[in-house]
Amino acid sequence: MASHGIKDLIDTLKKTEGENVWIYISHDLYGNQSLKCAFQLLNNEKHLGFLIGSQEIYIEKDRICNIGIEGELIYFADEIMCIKIRKL
Image (tube, rainbow, N blue to C red; front, side, top):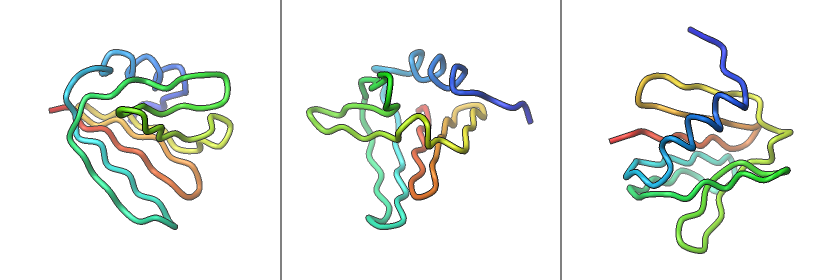
């Protein structure tokens, strides 16, 4: 499996932005959630994530420790939360 960096992740998320996708969020404190939607990419100096309506869901860039791009699945995680996006 190829190793992916933050730039690869951002490029892939930009290509997926606005498409209908499944988003899975797993958080050690808040549990698991999933939703089917189109998202707007949230990418600034400090955060990487997405906007759904007015709700921001993100991970601080300097805390991301796991990145994966595997076919229709994109994921990134820190120590307590994992965000997975599956293209439809």
